[in-house]
Image (cartoon, rainbow, N blue to C red; front, side, top):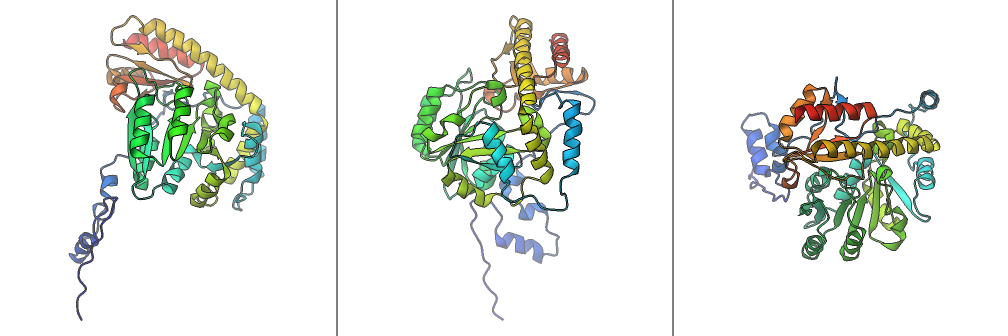
Length: 387
């Protein structure tokens, strides 16, 4: 029998050729991940979430306050009635209706649900990843914008913020004109810097962008600013939110509001039943008691402002230190040595996030989640002792 010539395929994503994998198989050697996994994935590190066991957890921007005990008891009864033997309702109609009614979605707009906002970022990345597609975002920003774009096969373009973490409007508009991105990500407030970008600059981006502009409002309960009411003004605007920062991080529920033509296409890449029945029941229950979560958010805003004042008094006169304004539920600070300070805080029983290696603009920066007043006091005392 004539042998077929070796078939080689070119892959944009860096996959090994058929010849490489067939050669490994033919040699009698067992295939390893290095034979099959894309080279760019082999070169990556997994997203690391450190253990918080035994520590005051101030690293993940969570709401430190649980639901009041009477609500927790009622929620337990509701969850006990959930039909775990059945798949969720495929359209999540009741949950979507509750989100539209209670979270400010404009009339005529719907939402797409995700297993956390991370899944919605992935869905957007997959749906727009045509050959040559570009995804653009300021840097530093939420890391999943870049990670999801690269995993989907798009090219990621990052535009550095200014030295004081403002959106560089001129550079961003120039990058849009040069690269014609399919998606532009703008976090509002930005993570990890905590500030809201200038509205006029965002409007200029919306008018210049040839594709979708997604404003990520994960921290909207603490900024009390939103682009959600302006969805009717811009056909290429989408607003992404999560209920995690509101106080429901364990539910893993995100939602994207946009014009119907966008949602209709994005829904095609949504995994079926991607929001489980317990999340559905718990989220609808929590939205029925949104006033409780709003009170907690108001308390955290006040605690954030108090923490900013205390940190400013502690760090303002120290060389190499700085405290940056925040409109989120976390505060970014700069210290002389972020790695050493992190270890000192860990020794004191406090877990915060060292973001100093994320970007040159963040050198020696720590991100501190706003906790309870007692947790914030422990944090300030430990920082004072460390510095």
